[in-house]
Image 1 (cartoon, rainbow, N blue to C red):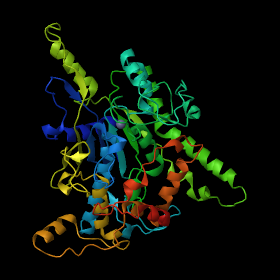
Image 2: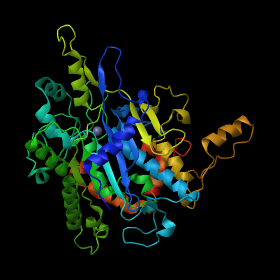
Image 3: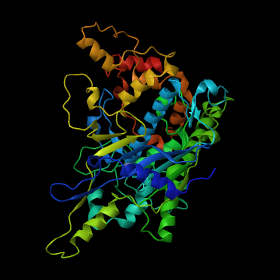
Image 4: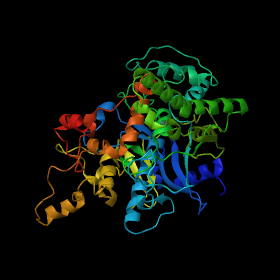
Length: 503
Ligand SMILES: [Zn+2]
């Protein structure tokens, strides 16, 4: 098998982006400002068919303030490109599983019926990617947060630096600037507090929230560097799919946007990526495991002994690419400068701003492969009516509620919980005067589904990663109340009681 080059992987995602409808791409604002954005995508390569297949992609750099995280699971609160691509991959896997259950074959997935061998990492047979399938992630710029802080420190002008320094600290922020170099930084990544956005950008290793405007509502979404780092331990499939899938690890991460940087600078930024995107996790999780073993020396088998950490830690190969993304910040800035170079006094160059719109792509999804997301909703700006979830037409297919509904429609999870009528069928039932007989008390909540026995290992690894002295122990956990919705988006008022019971 010929392994794809970083440029091949980057081109595969950029080619898909070129097919996006114009309204999904950055635009020229009414005041003439030119917009830029970030593109990310997952690319698969199988052993039989070496063709690179971009299965999901996202463009975007927005996230909702913490105050707007919904109770019904019906909005996307983190719409950075990498996270949209990751959720798009989950949707693509769900589609592929549905297709297999409908009798089709898959070039990429082994359905668990044919994959019965039990390993010590799983108690129940699970679906998995076929042996040899390569999972690549392309990002058009260094991921926000820790991995891009050295680049930010080098490129940020004084005005910008002052702007971000004015952002108030989040809980626990100690304000200590640790100027750790890349080589020694993994062991110096001992800060245990969450840092807001790009504040104190000389500090390395820190868990950071997503960068945002100082005057915008504060976000609890953690940076893409932090989220990507956790995938090297937990896999990129997410907690829901962990019930039925073996962990999906990223083999290669290809990053663009550094082509203008010379040799030494590139090397520095690359080692920052290695430090930030997996070394932090390896160090953190081993420290936590050691600590928990010491805390219970009398027990022969501590909970962490069964986790076999070496089997779960996956170092991705990280490389930069020269392939240029046409709506990258530096490309749009160059076009803005070029447009005013004739007469800079008469035509000052237009401002360059981050794009407002976000979009996602899921290969083969119907009715459309692409979807526009604004303010966490499909096509954006809808007013919530009553106490229920947004109507399905307004929801992104990648929101928690819709991924959960697709998950529940799979044959392989039907043995676990009975599946209710879909919302569309119910709508047509109501129109045709049929009784709605779907209501009962057996509808599990998102929280319950994510806390099933089948994903025990996933949750134990996550718990270990978030246990002191791990750097990730300061991870901002979304309140469980945001997960107590059922497949109809109804909030289960017994949430707290159930949360205790399900544990
Ligand atoms: Zn990001």
